[in-house]
Length: 347
Image 1 (cartoon, rainbow, N blue to C red):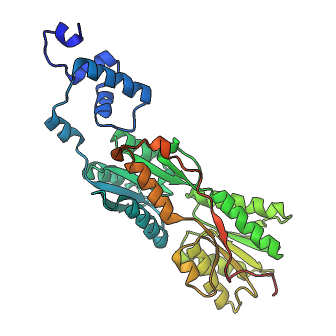
Image 2: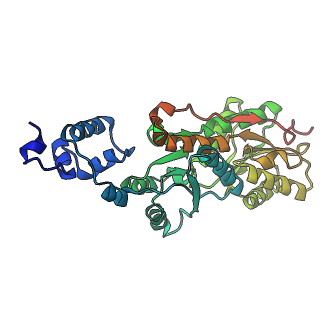
């Protein structure tokens, strides 16, 4: 005889299911609402108890407690507008025709109100789920807020930070190494690097790969040739102006993203230098502007739009009857795109 009948035939409640399955009431609710934040063995145990006792949640109460909007959120703290636009396009590619809409939320991780703003955004909008580009994706405090709100998410980052079903991983270190090899094989030895913000893991990964790639060719990255930028055009101009004023200036500069690389181009022109005859320049990302400036920019291609699409596809997989764990892609592999901004030194 089942538990319901032993209690006088009264319908089982969520408290009964939680007690019999030896889980919390919140876990039962997560199973009912197909939350991704439940271990598979726990899910099966709760579902078995629900089936055995014929538990059926009150649709009205369930709707009030767990109603989700048709909004996919994208929370970002990235100073490069071109990067953000490309990422948005990828998310839209994935949700178009699904009835879902994209709602973007810019923020500042350095702000005292950052976490409060993120929490208010998630709770107020009752989001279907969240896509997080770097560097927000690297902040475990944001992930904790999402988990507490039972809000699905996918992170995009240069290293794996979570279980595969919640990650799109880019191998930024490999991209930095490819930029280094290209410049070293052209014959450059005085090679400078302009990194991105210290708060971005991608800055460190690109720099690490770049230094390792140079070392493979017997070139040491001189600290005097390293500057920190902010992933903006203006910071590229400023950093390059300093580097090009050195008594023994570099013959090549690798900038941590395309916007800074184009800033380097301006600084070179302002200094009366020709690109690539006097200075070779390599960027990172391969934004559309890279092939529109002159000379066309040699850069490391990161398929940003595809990354946004893959993240959104993982986020919406369960609603389409798919298991996100079966959608695990290999790391996104950057490739070098050689254009007109690099050449042998003193060509």
